[in-house]
Image (cartoon, rainbow, N blue to C red; front, side, top):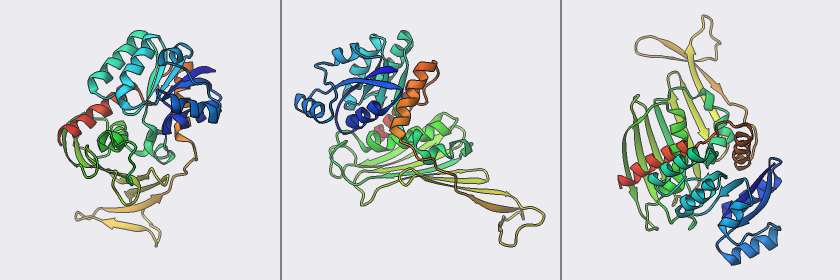
Length: 319
């Protein structure tokens, strides 16, 4: 079992602590939180060992799970990596692209593993259909949330939209060509609602909308490709696949058939993939343990995290 420690015991940090304690692939050593009051409360309530400093925790473990505010990701990761510890870093990977590139270089130099917490990659609605998403040419993503003061210290792009940026970059095998975006600050000092259009060199276009001032929650993405439409509801954990194939010689009388202007006929088929229930956060943490133990590539690499942050920054620069 890998000895692991958590930096940060806020809302998400406590979830990580609970899951790491349950995991059969890790041995939870303890945590550090800069708030002595919060650290004492968490230690007393759940029985976790609270460390007095970041350095002490790092020295006691094999893996450092960084669930601190984004501004401190770089310094925490740098200290851990230079002491040859593997690092799991919550999204976004760092506060700036320059910091992300520096972390990538450090990991390579010290020959340790790193993974970024883009948890939607492990959402069962996405994993059920990701292998069916092949060369999408138009993508639409909506990620809407009701207002919550937590997370408003960063633009909605880094808080919410970055999830969809990472998903899109993981399925589009092409370089980003252009980015256009607009954002509006309604209640926070940074944009609360944003829309972005990402154009890729292969002609694919992705439209993304993210809001943290909506009346209801929504996390949906739709992928359009040749002869197929794939819908993923990350919130409800549902997927739908609509495929079009050439019409057979003797179609069923209830078959849905479309005919285009050139007279070509296509039959529509509906599929509802089986969704396997899971805990996405536990899965991302345990696949990282597997990557360390088996010396394999993490599912969400530091390079993936850096690419998502780079596009997010391009979007923010449009505001």
